[in-house]
Length: 307
Image (cartoon, rainbow, N blue to C red; front, side, top):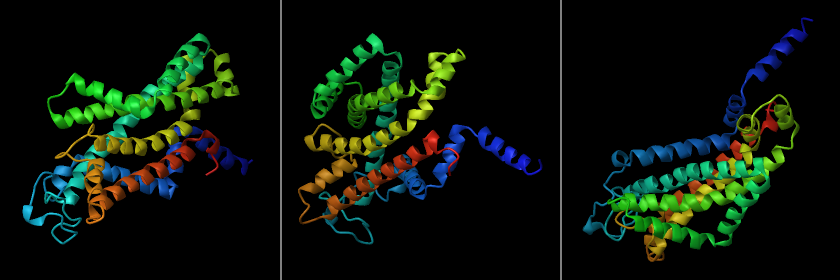
């Protein structure tokens, strides 16, 4: 009896931990995911305090230091107008991280709600909602992205050109990237609502909203997070492509995409102009990917108690 009591107490302590507490403890054991998380937090910090961290203003020009390579004064070199590339890279993180975070939040909300309602209620509700998704899928994503971007630009909601370009880019990317997420959520909900734990919740009189939030969403959040973290670097690349077409943020304002596009034409003679923005985007892509893998493992209820 004395040997069983400590075991029962340990099991009770494990069971008393919530799913989120247990997930965070498993996430902390994943070194690659934690390093990626710290890197993303560091980028967010740099983005918020770029004005105080950057050695120069993003528009400060030195015509005597045009297209210089890395040096003690300009650590990453200068561009074609004599502007410090490190400073513009730091200011560019503000735009790129805004695209990454806000498009993820908006896409997650729209796609999860749309897909969960469609999959849970089924029937004519599911057919109508999925026909809307199919219609959006039938339009090439790039065409839809440019169309939404042009529409938001024509509304003239902001007088500030930087804020206008940022807002229209965010809205365009958010309203075109939720469709895939909605399909994934619908498929996961269709599978989850046939599970025994959902039947058990229904048998005790649990409502649809409670069952979705308390039982279904925690069991499907792993694939959603993984897909979302894969979409985030894709949205950063889409922002770069919009800047290349002249539809995104344009100089003198900077993002990593703008900097890479500026260095494209001078890549052979001055490779540092495209190397550093590319390295920043690549590191961010890897960080979100590793973090997504870590969150997938941590939020999977099947892994509970194994680590």
